[in-house]
Length: 477
Figure 1 (cartoon, rainbow, N blue to C red):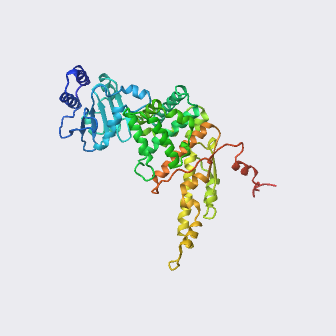
Figure 2 (cartoon, rainbow, N blue to C red):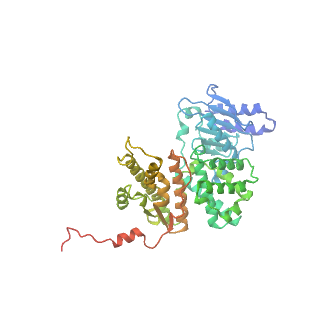
Figure 3 (spheres, one colour):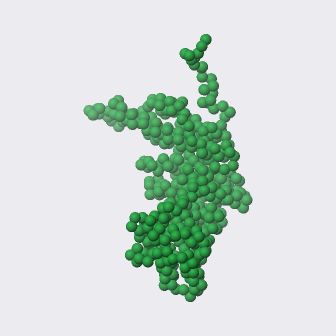
């Protein structure tokens, strides 16, 4: 690869001649830039058209042992300064968001975007912003020889350091807090309404990243993606009312209590001046920010005990495990476990819900294979006989996830913050369960009675306190 000064001079030369440059000049400078990085083989470097952005020059770099790299050369004025983007907690500007999305047409793993002044490098599979530079002088300082031909062919892009989850979570938290302050100060929304609105948007964006749009029952995912696209393209007229309408549709069609009508929220968010910029920035966050571990880690701030609850690993609970082991088809519908967020942390919610569902599924298999369940081959069954037989099937077997979440779990919270965190994590985990299920999605369980204010003494504590003392055979009298 040529010296760093050659790259800097080329970029400065392009900007000096910009006023008189033509489309051919844009391609010529782009190819010179690639040549300085060592990419001179025309069999490897293939020009490509970018759907929707004809002014962008693109080149697909084919690699023998790795996914292709796509380089995009935009016109000046199309890219925001990367440092300003990152400072707001974002991963994209509008142009880089659009270009990285086009990578799927090329089946490329990485995207490099530059206007020969500002530069971005993305892992297109995870949406992660890996490297960036605000000026030609910073390019070689920040990128080094990562894009050099020999290094790329040796796998340098896969070796670029990824930010740890704690960094990504902190960015998400700061973005949420910034918008919460905007809602409370500039739009005079109550704090609880601001947090609720942002939790809704996090949940919807999380659902968008689960590839559910084409699965039956999830059609509102496409509606939300359309609103984010409108916001990115600056077409925000009427977007506030459309967003409120989507909240209403999600509540009615999916039965999600998180989206239940809230007049103060609706009055605030029906204003395009708020909904448009907020949805725009939401779309400019990477998909890496919307995983359950990252969202949960974003609550790792403030009070030390709350920070501990975020990272607390569920402990072995022999009493609970014994209780679940004793479940049978006869008593499965009456199963009830209590979770104390203050004592067990937030990860216990997903852990014990999964334990419940696994127990129900195991019992269902045993029930179906039991010899007294299915009629004999020569036994005639009329419609009423089948109906009576079906009515005897435990509810936990007919709709396992809904029954487990609605009727078999009580989650105790000691503060509004615990309630907010626990509710959001439970919704995201339910989405994860539905994602893995082959069954048609027909709505969320009702969670109105799941969350309760923590009493001074839990029922499990009371049973333990007042249970009769067992005499030890080793006790000396």
